[in-house]
Length: 306
Image 1 (tube, rainbow, N blue to C red):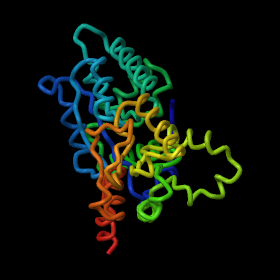
Image 2: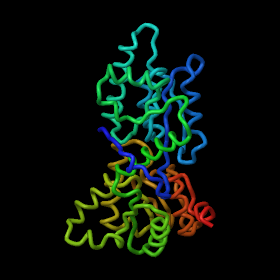
Image 3: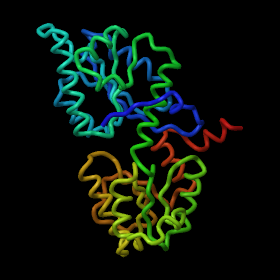
Image 4: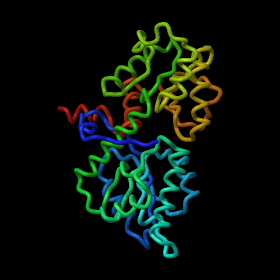
């Protein structure tokens, strides 16, 4: 899956930015410096949730992506694929094959390619062809504004992957709590699937099929408000099955449980971290979801506006 951006695609709209879970792929730091300069470019940006490094060779990367829920990869082409036994041409070929393998298995990951110089990037493209000429890239001397431009483009890429940033699954008896959560999320720029916000769109649809798509494919996260009422409803069980199918196919955190009573819900492990809606107000639940999505609190945002 490829992507290309024009300058008008990347305005700073003031909307919250998607939290980037970044994996830096560089050579051993005792041999090369790419890990250091790539991390330095990103470490002060609040949008970046996590910066992890991987020095092992290719197959271990797939395990790391699944374990950490990586959504963004910074690949130091000249470092990670450097070999004293191969020519640059062979190293470039290895890099292109590796990128395509990752994209095939994890199509929602965005790549940023790191090069020591613009000339090295041009040499890479001369050997790999135009299919990589639109990839985001950074250089050791990239300015803060250039880094911001790359992060904005990553944000656009991730936002385009899903129709909703969070889908809310709940029993009708718990609507008042959930609606208060939904209101805070929407007020802070989140694209939320909440049935009352979608009444016109839902009218006339086959809801069984539509909800299957929403809870399995169309949302970055699914917030599940568990209760005895939730456990006993046909519709909520249908929604949960779709969310569980998503978890099965894509390792990583997708279901965000919020407990409203002590009911045990089959399929949600007791060891899964959850929020306790009996101890937290709806605004506090919404705030934690905002931090999960954007690595920022609505309280902090309100203070900044003041």
